[in-house]
Length: 323
Image (cartoon, rainbow, N blue to C red; front, side):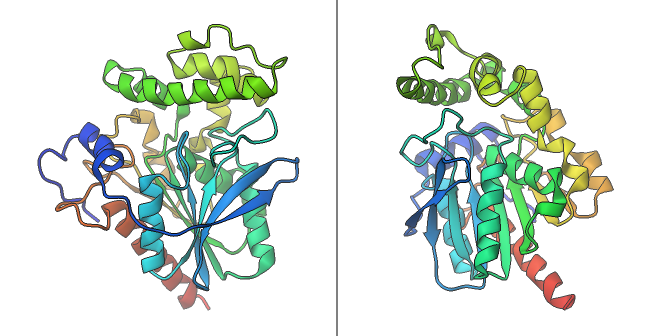
């Protein structure tokens, strides 16, 4: 599964920036479903169906959504390889504010669990596969390992791309001067979302001085942690990092973290955890950036999409051989 690249795509920053800015937008048609959650909130799910016996559930990254280029590319690949697609929009990420003051975060797995249980109860799909990007990859992997006994039996495989397996270490990586443009962009979106949420909950959210928040630690200390029951940013990062839960994963899982990913520090590459869990395969290509993986020649099918589909093909073959 070697990723071949040519100049200038050996650069992690070029790999990261090229797809959202210059990749032609993959064409995929979605049908939206509003899924009501048990706590009174909702998530919007975007479907692409063709009565296939398997479905690939896509989980986006921080402040992403189902129509990001990487989501559309993976959705198209899944359809080409004979799967239906469910593209998840986390709370507040579908273009409409969610109802509750809580939103989503890197360790928020309960919504994914409710949707997967509903999928299994419907009995439409023999196999469910998960693909998580960045934050979505952390959520998927944490979910599989935090309570394996409750994971629906129809979940047969998972691939995580550019996963910040150690959230503290990832925050440290993003604090480097070379990552300031990414941090500025992401925090700008998060600040806007908090300001909008404060209009709905003016007595619960203090937005004075929010424009001066310039690091993820500041944002998570002030908003993410208290809104979701954590003591502070460190408590949130420690309890939400999927690395803690990897030893308990019991289904076929592949983690793909490029060595030149500017969002990841050295602790985000779970070598020891993968070595000691036969269910986990860790792939660390030399290049790929953050959710990039631009292939040599820039074909319509990105390397990450081919990699995921090949992994799920292996999962299907293993399932057939065990019947």
